Every structure is written in C-alpha cells, then in structure tokens.
Length: 376
Ligand SMILES: [Zn+2]
Image 1 (cartoon, rainbow, N blue to C red):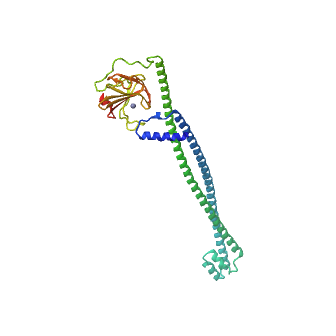
Image 2: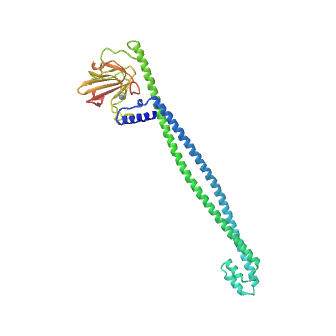
Image 3: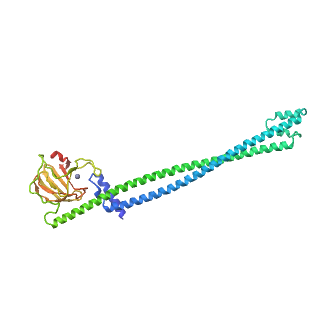
C-alpha cells in the first residue's frame, strides 16, 4: 500500500514538473529521502553481489584458458616429437631400401640381368616388393625389414595426424573460452556502469537529505523564535517592530522592496535546475527579520500563508499591475488594508519552498510576470 502511494506521488510530481510550476527539493520529505537512501543502498549491494558472481565466473574461464593453453603447449611438443620420429622412420626405411638394393645388385652382378631390369624399373618400394615376390633370391630378411620400416612410417604418420586433430580441437576450445571471456567482461562492464549510476543517485539523494534536514532545523529555529517573540509580547530578538515612516529609495515607480538586502541572489528570467520557464521574479537575500516594503501604493489582496510562497503578500496597484512578496518570517499587514509606497509589509524569512532567507519579489502585468527592474 505504501509503495502504491509513492508511485502516485511520483506521478503527481512528474505532472507538476510538466505543468511548469516551481518545484524544488521541498516536495520530498525527509522520510521519503531516507527510504530512498535505504532502497538505493540495497540496489547497490545486490548489483555488487552480481558483479562479484560475474568476476568469479570470469576467473573460472581464465583458469580454463590457462589449462587449455598448457594442454596446447604439451600437444605442440608431442607433435614436434612425432615429426622427428617420422623423419627418422623415413631415413631408416630409405637406408634399408638402399642397402637391400646394393645386396641384390651384388648378388646378380654378371648373372640375371632380367631381374636387375625389373628392379631398376620399379617405381616404388611397394612395386619392387611385388615384383620381388617372383624372385626367390631376395632374402626374406630384407623383405621383412623393409615391410617393418614401412609400417613404422605409416604408424608415425597416423599418430601425428591424430595429434594434429587433438590440437585443433583444443584450439577451438580456446576460441570458445575467449568468446565467453568477452561476454562475461561485457556483463561486468555494464554492471559497473549500473553501480556508478546508483552511486550518483545515492550522492544526489544524500545532498537532498542534508538540505531537507537543514531546512527543517531552520524552520524549527524560526518557529521557536516566533513563539519566543509572541510570548515576550511585541518583538523578539530578530523581530524589530515596524518603523514609523515609509522607506522609499530611487525615483522609479517602485521603491526597492528590500533595501536592507545583503545581495541579489537571483534575477527575473534566470534558468534554474528545479524550475521550468525561468525565474518569475527577483530574489533578494537578507538576514531573517530584515524589513520588506510595499513597492508602490495599493491594496493588500492577500496577506497569509501559501505552501510554496510561505508567508506572502499580494498588492494590487491598479491598471493591471500587481506585486507579490514571498517567504516572510512574519507579516505586518493584513488582507484588505491599503498601503503606502515604502510602507513596511513584513520581515524576511525562509518559509514555503525556500532554500534560505530571502525576499522573492514578483511583478505581474495583467497576470503575466514581468521584470521588476523596469519599474525601479
Ligand atoms: Zn524567487
């Protein structure tokens, strides 16, 4: 049930972002960010366990490859030995043939020339042996020796062919193992990329959590200050009572709404990560409790609370011109009240969706945000 709720919240958030409304980390609660941290940690652990499994698989393949390589080396040595053996067998066979021919020649010198012709016309040892069948004088010793040498040659040739066959099978196996190694390495690479992504998410979530906790502390501190101020009657330490006279600066149609600011932290139209369509006003960073003033005379149409704007004031100046003042720690005007140009309306704070004490000052002409600077 809880999971389902989260998904619904996610869909709403996505919709809010598409709708182009201001959204920051304030939309996530500390509990949600902590749950997400646990969830990400679990995801990372299981991804790392999978990676370990793949690595041990890879090590197994590498062991097999080393073993196969050893077998290949042994097989190569055996093939070399068989080749040597074959050469020697062929030499032995040839020596026997040559010495046999010499003996036959000697036996028949000055005698049976017909046999000598038969002998010299022989095209191979086999041919000679066949023809020699008819020659009783050829010793059975020579014949047996030659046959034996020939058989040895044949056996060694067969042995070498078998070794070559085994060698090529081992080579195929080694190719397959190399392919498996590539595949597992690819899986490990993608697992590592996944872990890096999760790591990034963990970092981002930690930053969000830290920010949320700071905001919660700041909000708590403000509430305590406000409670102390209320208990003390009129004005706590950082809540100075409204000054008597109006504060007007410059010679524009608008006076500056926060002349006590330390610096301007954001500009109208600024593109920020968490907003769609650019910043709708100017942000004036100032310590909590710095007074804020009506930019021009008009009627307060809103002086109250908004989840996004915090304690805020909206003033209608007529002719389609409206000003909005957001994130106050407290207000000193009320709805329906008429204010003069430069009249104090509240105190700077960080209420609503705000990352630190500042006044968000927004000017709208016929409902469309415009640059405040053109009126000051
Ligand atoms: Zn702002």
